[in-house]
Length: 258
Image (cartoon, rainbow, N blue to C red):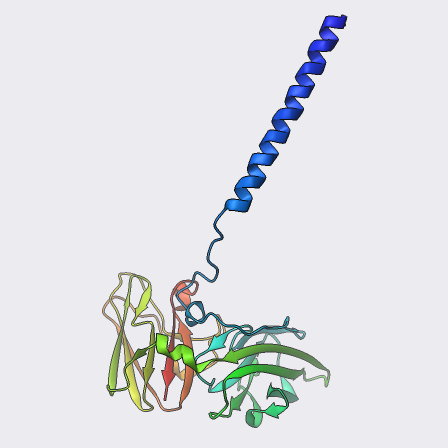
């Protein structure tokens, strides 16, 4: 190659390098000025509860599937119970502890469901606001046990975001546009809630978690077609998170019973 050709090649290489530097500079500048996207873009209770609590990473035992309340959630009321789901048969002496600092807020014994795939423990209805750590020991028929843990929080001030319907003995929730309307409500103990499907697609009323639906099993409905309804009377105070299992990612709601 001639000397002139070598010079031309060098110039081209230099121009390519300069163009690359300019590209990287402009992209980095754009990154620093980009407006951050909001987090937690869901229509669940948690999206309205901008919690200041810090949660440590959960520890999942062998055969663990899910738990309610979910790890890292901030609730506006006390859970009626803590439920942990597994994909293997549970056996005694499986146990659940619900602690806030040094105080135990689990009441009664840990119970294993009839199908042996979930265990639960009631929670003290007078539990105060704060951060709670759940530790559990899951035992199998062969006598082996495995431990795990997760956390949730209670912050009752966020109940101000809920629709207060405590003046009604019968409440209707419409299932329309893949949402529950109203989504988050407060009712009194003994109130009958009726869900009505206004959509052309089937919906469900399912207690958390998904797909176990074990938190309050009696709240679970069958498939509801257009015009169908389903009713449930809430007799125990506490928070009841639920969802439509056919549209679980977008169709979530909560009921606070007082």
